[in-house]
Amino acid sequence: MARTPSSPLGSSTPAPSEITPETVFQDRRHFLSMTGALAIDSALPLDALAQDSAASLRALPGKVSPLSTDEKKTPWEDAIRINNFYEFGTYKSDPARNAHTLRTAPWQVVVEGEIHKPKTFDIDELLKLAPLEERVYRMRCVECWSMVLPWVGYSLSELLRRVEPTGNAKYVEFTTLADPQQMPELKNKILDWPYVEALRLDEAQHPLTLLCFGLYGKTLLPQSGAPVRIVVPWKYGFKSGKSIVKIRLTETMPTTSWTRANPREYGFYGNVNPQVSHPRWSQATEQRLGKGERLDTLLFNGYADQVASLYAGMDLKKFF
Image (cartoon, rainbow, N blue to C red; front, side):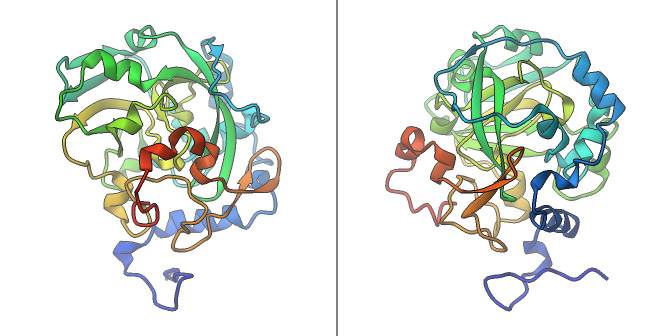
C-alpha cells in the first residue's frame, strides 16, 4: 500500500481529501529529485506522432511584442516533451505521447455569461480578431520548474472588449474540453472534469494575459493546449487553461478545479510568490529547463512592476 506523504510543516498527516493524488505527488517528487530537469525525458525520443505533428504545424507569424522578456528561450524539444495536461496523463512526458488523440479541428469557443454580446466563435474567427504577436514570457510551474517560451496570440482583453462585459461581470471562467474519446485520462477521477480555471476580470483584462494560439511561431501542439489556450505569466502554470471550449463571465467567484480538489494547496489566485511555500515544498527557487540551473523565484514571476497594483492592499499569504 502506498504511503500518504506527510506535510513538511509538521508531523501530522493531512486527510486524504486534502492531498494531491498519490500518482501526481510521486511524479513531482521524482521531477524535483533530478539534478538536471531534463533527465526525466532526455533519453526518450519524441513520439513519432508528435514529430509528424510538429512537422505539419501551420506558421503563425507575429510581431515581437515589447512585453517580451529578452531571456534565452527554452529549447523547442524541451518545451514539447515536458508538460502538465492531466487529461492525457499525470507524468510530465505523458501529454507528448498521448495528446495526438486530440482533434483540434473543427473547434469552437462559446463566450457567454455577464456580457451584452454572447457569441460562439470558430477558431479561425478568433485567430483573425486581432493582430497576432509573439510574447516571450517566463513561465513558472507550481512544481518548481520554469521555462521561457515564445507564445503567439493577442491580449485576451481584445476578445472581452468585443463581447462587452456587463456591469455585473467580475470574474472570467475558462473551461477545457472534456471528451473521454479524445482524452483517455478522464476515466481516472484525478479531478472533477472538465478542467475549470478563472481570473478576476481585471486580471483577465490585463495586457499580459494572452489568448494564445501558437508557440515558437507555429500553431500549438496538442500537448501545449491546442488550438487555443490562456497564458497568464505572473501566475503558476495551472492557472493557464488549455484547449478552451468555453469562456464565461460571472458575478461571483467560480470554483476552479484545483481549488475544489485541494484548497489547502491551491488558492484561487495562484500568483507566483517565493514567500508562500507549498505545504510540502518551498517555492523560493526553481529549476530552469534547458539551462539545468536553479534560480531564485521572483515575486509575480518577475512581472511585479506590471501587475502588483492589481493586488494593492491584499494579504498575499492569505489570498494565495
